[in-house]
Image 1 (cartoon, protein in one colour):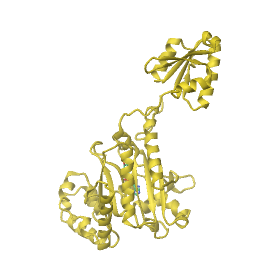
Image 2 (image 1 turned 90 degrees about the vertical axis):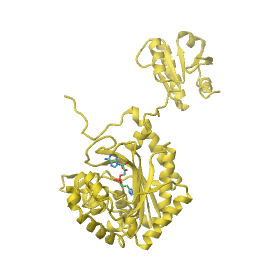
Image 3 (image 1 turned 90 degrees about the horizontal axis):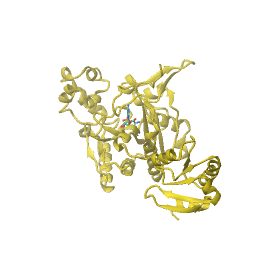
Image 4 (image 1 turned 120 degrees about the vertical axis):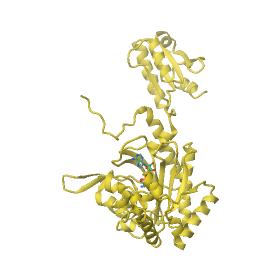
Length: 416
Ligand code: HAM
């Protein structure tokens, strides 16, 4: 019996990789324009890193991490997200001391043991960006501007931006208390998870999809009504800057993120096109995280998008290139001459294909058609003797006589 991949872990097939490369390249280009540099961090970290950053009572840490004990007896975890690792690296390499502002981006696989379905996998891929060192609301707006620019350049009008503020250690405790009191009055209507988390992580009740919880939390107090004056001012400034930059957004006072490190501005880019997996990208500010992980008091904000979800939104577009030239050959001498020409043209930067199966001329031309080659040329004894042949434009069937030299063929391929 043949061995198959693990459930929720997918192969990226050649037919899809063009689309993924387009997404990655677009992100790299946009990030560069906003001054971001790439950071590559390991896929495996000490388990404690995620417990301390994402939070012990979150779904990710409670239920979804791929944690194992290695041969040395250490508890290690396949990273469920990128922010914690990037902040660990920032602290470990004292990047904050090299520059007061650090703008970093990353891309790669993340791992969460969730129930797989369309748009939700156990190994999935994120492209994320983080800015540390600036608490100013202008940075929040800049990150959101960059995210919206990225989606524009990907050619997506969906998804739409929703923002919220989760307050700070000054105002959140009082809000939490108000919410706990509200939930206590309705606990019979709550699901088992929400009842259990009522005091440990009460905010999650606002995000629960169980119909009973949705109904019971309808009139729940909102964080936005409990912001302290500083958080209120910060959030208003973010909205003003977004208006200045003409970034459309809507407020979602019920948005609570599934990770505990957030403070103040949080956001999600949501779509109705992917069923229950509505968040295509998400992020927010995490002003206490670096300190919480043993570093200095450096504020931060960032986001990550799900590559699989963006790819689903972009759909079946063809991002594969096509060969510039197909060289069809008849006989051994032509095969050698064709190989020589092919090598020279490839050195000039062209994509050239030729027969490597000893097929008939008819099937070689069928292959040129299948590959959608722009041009083709047939080499046989007659052409070799004459030192010339004819290049055919596969689009309109027109033919041009040409000397069998790299320079002459290059001129045709470049439209000369
Ligand atoms: P997150 O909301 O957990 O945030 O994930 C960000 C994005 O990753 C989601 O919006 C979604 O597109 C994608 N995603 C998450 N889980 C899955 C899954 N199981 N299958 C497919 N796609 C998935 C974070 O991870 C934060 N680190 C974002 C951030 C960066 N906040 C600040 N900086």
